[in-house]
Length: 396
Image 1 (tube, one colour):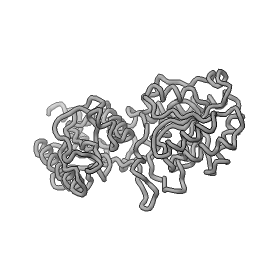
Image 2: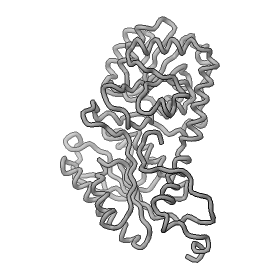
Image 3: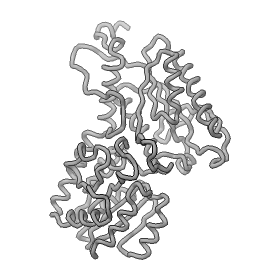
Image 4: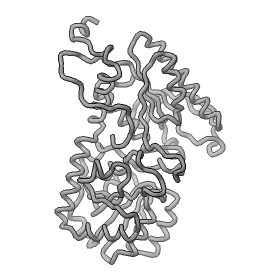
């Protein structure tokens, strides 16, 4: 799962003559259920995709949560005119039933009331399943309020598990737009392959930067690097963010720079297929990126197109043999590295992209991660309750 922290994630369970009987599981997270949620400023596409993938992976591994508690993703008043969060039974964008809990949409009461509503719902769920092994899995600890999830679990004798993405070090330069990214699961790329002939048809070496157009994603670095590159190179930028006006200005001045805006899913995949090189330029100096979840990088690697990336987090350690690394974060260094990569044989670049794609589809799919997480739950969190013989299981 990249650098996402799922505490003490372990390998497969020992082989033996036991049958695992799963606990009842409650999942808690912020989930979108309407088109309006997607268009809203609080919608987190990366988080939504992570949650849907995690739930699908656990379900495929035989540990489907029997209740999903959600909080509606809306900005607090007055950024939103809504004073109360939507409550009731709905369906997520992935078709999964979810129970949204109510809250007052005014800070600081939003955090408090959402926490109380979640804890009450968890207490009722625990009572209905008393006598059974129980687990509550919470996605992030700021919203939904992890303190209330932990407290409800503690009081009801329920075990807890938390998935935390993008842990931000205090003092970092991290605007709220950090999570407004176009991040997808590797499974979406199973039928997508790069097109090696595209460069020959264009006559230009195409570089693509897609995602949240913010300074921490190296947008200015990419734009400035074009002034160091000769003719025959083009930069295509896709996404939205506070740097979008600067991208538009650069595109107006240099016809080698193209701004595509925020693309639909199919358009994004087509852009990846047409590229010669994808950029992952998240800076490592302005903010501490050691604990950021590399969902955008995972998306790029799964596309099969070669990737140039900064050395954020544990990128070099885990993916170093599957991409090109940028060690100096200057526009000149970006241009020099692009020139080096463009000078390599096309077959060599293509082979690296294929290698990365194969690894991502094999080792980073949600099916694979769901199996690993399910084994951890079965073998580490509930071994006394779950390690029963086949005969004991049959007589229940």
